[in-house]
Image (tube, rainbow, N blue to C red; front, side):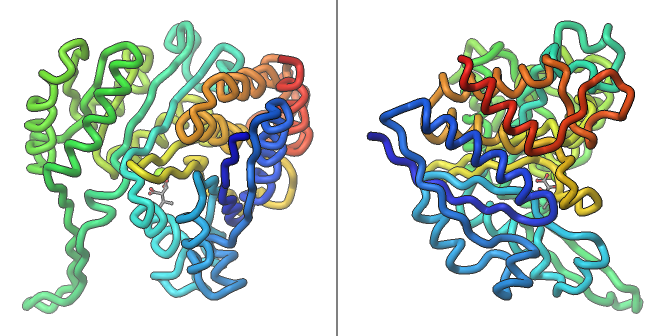
Length: 366
Ligand code: IPM
Ligand code: MG
């Protein structure tokens, strides 16, 4: 019997609704395999945790994450007005997400930008640009760079308020994320787009130097260097040229949201946050407080994150592939949810929970 302990951090707003569907899928996977057991344990995290227990990333949650074999996390954060009720450093992003990433040292963030045929109608891009489908793996460095560097605010000698934020990497940090990217490129199409801004940023100059140093260890991988601004345009005009893309934390934050844009919704963006010893999985999007509690958010990003967990944390590749197939088959059968599709767009509209039920049903048929 293989037993896996999974920490479930449902998060805020639509988080619990999405988590319910993810749990259904995990239970269905467990039921299909007599030698598999998932021990699912919930813990508070995010703005709701702040209001309930006084901290967005409470010690009990930290302890559970340390003990668990993997962590599944929902989106966090509340509306602007609700967020103002929380001290700045306790707000969900600064107080929970970034500390979680740092605590688990999940330096490699995999953000698949995947548009198979069944989902093609969601994309705002023309069919001739989407071609046979988009399948990009954005690899974002997740625990360094501008988001984690030292910050300073104050008043300068001229009496003007100023702010200083630092973008800092050492070569070890850059090397570790690049190894991961080269290895993924080797497993896929053997082309690695290195995204940088070396015409301006010294951090990119060092980053690119290390790319050149590592490249001989991966002679079968072709490296293509591309400036981040030009990559943003290319993602819209010719996304199918990309396979694996690797980049610094902030570049990855921005370009991966653009990835959601070319798919048609951030709701189609699951992600895996991987470290050497720990991993957690989360949708790439926010908690959508405007549609919370309405049972209309599509659970794709959360169920996709389950599939990534099955693959990366538990090496259950076949089950992961089955979950992807199941969720895509629900779209292929013409179903969608109100957050993704407009009434009259030719789809059969169903709610969050019915979508999850259909995924489970499809899974049962394989
Ligand atoms: C993401 C989010 C986070 C980030 C925020 C919520 C801290 O935008 O995961 O992309 O900037 O990394
Ligand atoms: Mg983001």
